[in-house]
Image 1: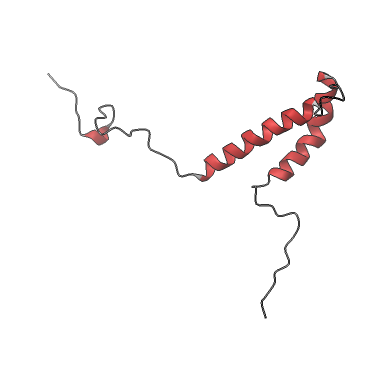
Image 2: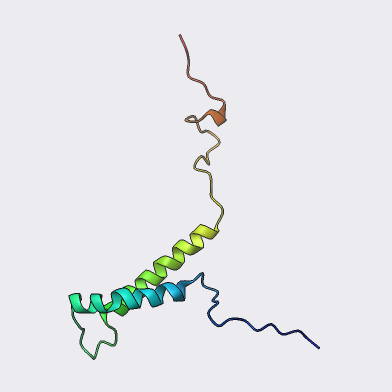
Length: 92
């Protein structure tokens, strides 16, 4: 018989994005709609939902970037601006 693990429903695979978006809605959603105004009912989306969508996309892109290993800023083998290339300025 297989073992089945019961998991908490609050755990997500998106690095906490749902938690962040819930806080975004609670803190900023109403303020954005109040300041920018309510869009027409025929448009389908309010300003707060559009801004939330852009925020979510940027947050997830930053999260994915943070998971990648850092890259070296000196990728050229002809780099002369750092000590790693062995180049030394002329003296005298």
